[in-house]
Length: 166
Ligand code: HEC
Image 1 (cartoon, rainbow, N blue to C red):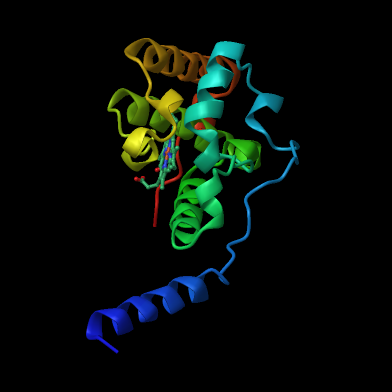
Image 2: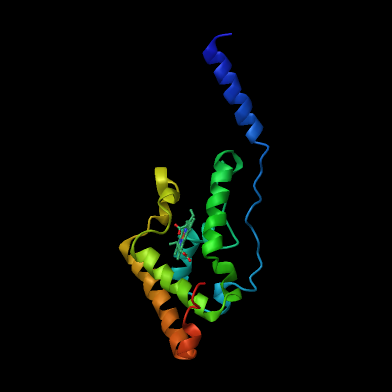
């Protein structure tokens, strides 16, 4: 057999082999600690969160077809896990009020600086509706700011201070 043929076969075997790795899907309908249980989310804001953020920052990911194919499946799962570890809108209410406040602050920062949604999310025309316009970004940051203002008006100032990291 020619060397290139051998190499091709080796790749094919490897490709088929890794298909056996099936990352667990991030899909739960538990709304107990969902952000919407405490904070008002207008439809137009909710629509943005749904198409641009929730795949990585909630307990409900909409999986594209290539999520069934390795190594895309693992790459995608690692983004979801990393994103959720930092910020999970589906479980925001489990966090202390200071942290909830801080997550709104970070949401504003990330959206303003165009760090979110993650650049790779819209590569190659994927998730085209997550390519946010300036108007959508403003809508999102204005909403997050309104939530912070509401918290400030509702809770004593010291309860909104983030505990110092050790
Ligand atoms: C494709 C997955 C993905 C999408 C979509 C996405 N994020 Fe993220 N996000 C991540 C990952 C991964 C991190 C952690 C790594 C980092 O900070 O760069 C993160 C970090 C963050 C953080 C920082 C949290 C912290 O405590 O440090 C905020 C805030 C955030 N994202 C908000 C958003 C918002 C708002 C949207 C929608 C406009 C969004 N993200 C869309 C994956 C994503």
